[in-house]
Length: 552
Image (tube, rainbow, N blue to C red; front, side, top):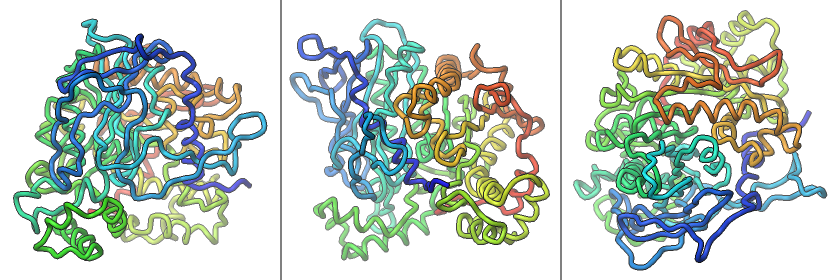
């Protein structure tokens, strides 16, 4: 049995970052597309018929405003060339080695390395990337604004997996992707120690995204987009950031549809916990609590190292820019009328729950479940949970039982809570949809893993050989579902309703039917369909553990 883990999956998906070779036709220089933003002129290049701008600055270097709200970028003179990935935010993980190719030039399916993320790390990280079919043509295209995953700790959109070219060709839309502050730089709460000067420190990364959305409102018409039809969508941590934006008054009116993929944020970090984490960081840095000015001159790398005292950097419920929890005790009223799709994959937690081989014995199962999601089991024992799951699924083996339980207790409850609380509000019920991603990676292990919907919604299966298959046959098999999901995304951005000719009729979600679209392999035996309350017995059982957001 081939070994796998989450790192292996990310290695496969990371192959997309080295795929600039797929941009076969481009134009720049005298023929470069030009746009005028509120801060100055930018030039891009034409790639496969689309105008592409990479690394447009929307905010000032955040070293100037460390642990504070961002500032809009200062205007420049002349033309700023925006054709390559810009710098990305400081991360909490190390650099990674380059990939290795098989003799035929295709990525090897085992053992190859993830290429380095595109662009160096820097606090000067507030940049957006734009793909558009037209400039200044007044067509008012829907805007698809993507926020990357990696929790609130790591990640970047500097990766061709998020290339918007095919979406632009498919749906005549504008695609925008955003980089912003992360980990301690974006979410270290200093307000109680530093006072008013640091009032926004616990949510600086979220304020970066709001500043980028304001940039969209002010500039997207120049790029052929419609500022009144902005869809924010994100996967994993990106979805959690979308949920958080829905509760932030400063974000109200800056977006008009929301899609969260495997990412929910029911509660934010309370100030009492955030303050203790901050003290741990300051202690590691050797900074006295009443001398926070010392933080301004510390090297970026030293703060990065100290940030590792916490593995759960999160937005903070500070009573100011984030006055309440995103989805607790109810859905945020300020975004009640905003259409929303929520989703998860079938096997979110497989890489942590099923071990390095994906094979477990019944004797190993209780320990595997406890080690994976023990903090989420409430008063249940692992043995009790496994016993109940064997009653629900008598034909499943130990690994599939453990994975199912881990998903239901850890990865799925946030989505259920958010959807249920949305539909409890009459203003939201008709504008809420739920889907589950059941596509199984062709290797290794055949599971519907965390991140697997990304190449499908972006219609970029060819850029994700480790997720959708490297051969022409495997990619051809994946393409029908990519067509369905990308058309769904575009329809939702255009109209606020995901129903379109490429998907079966998709009823909105309610507490009675719990209609859920299942995106699955397009074969005779398994296809995209709507199910009522899928995994209902699991949902009811897992609710007894009373889920709490990690880190809060």
